[in-house]
Image (cartoon, rainbow, N blue to C red; front, side, top):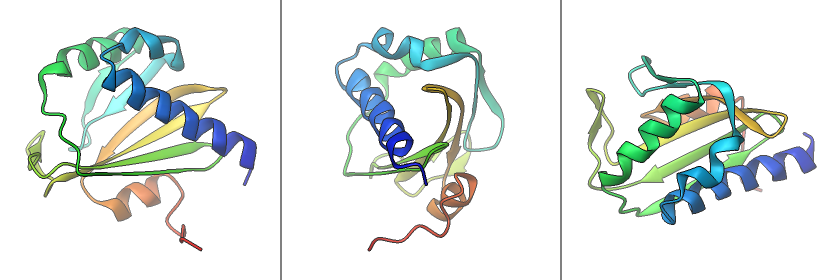
Length: 135
């Protein structure tokens, strides 16, 4: 694994979290590739293109933001963000059981694809991190 790139990918997702926390979506606008796509937890295309993703994030400001726990993993090509929120039980018609995992595909410092998952093992496999273990 390219350690420096994995660290950069972790930092990108931390910047994402910070921008959401500060309600400053524009701070990360350039981190999205112009042709970024975001698949929702049901597997459908939720957003296509930077402007749609940014519009969705701005519209989501009214969503509950209580967070019980975060998990963040990365390698040279992906980052995985797991969010535990006991209040979030369903999204796009899919049962979440209070947790959502988003896989970020990254290239040259930009997010090129996002995909949400209801289950950690699916997200780990999607990110190529299914053999990841704490040491």
